[in-house]
Image (cartoon, rainbow, N blue to C red; front, side):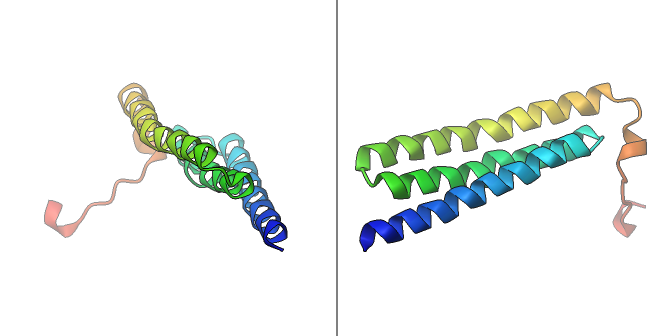
Length: 111
């Protein structure tokens, strides 16, 4: 009975991760502006990868495999924001039409 529950839980997690990744990839190709694409791509790194690796952890059940998958997840969660930040800084410094794509709100305190 325990193996059946593990398989069902891991199947749900893996299917959910694949669904999130599919929607994110669709968003990467759908959006025109780089910042919107980065937000959609970040879902692949955070939520999609987390669901898939959690599903693999549940199905494996071995401590050594679980620790390796946790390390992969941690390295990805540390590296992905750094890479996204660098791409965002490059886009801000290179794009002359940034004000056309982004709405800057003014607060009463700024006046």
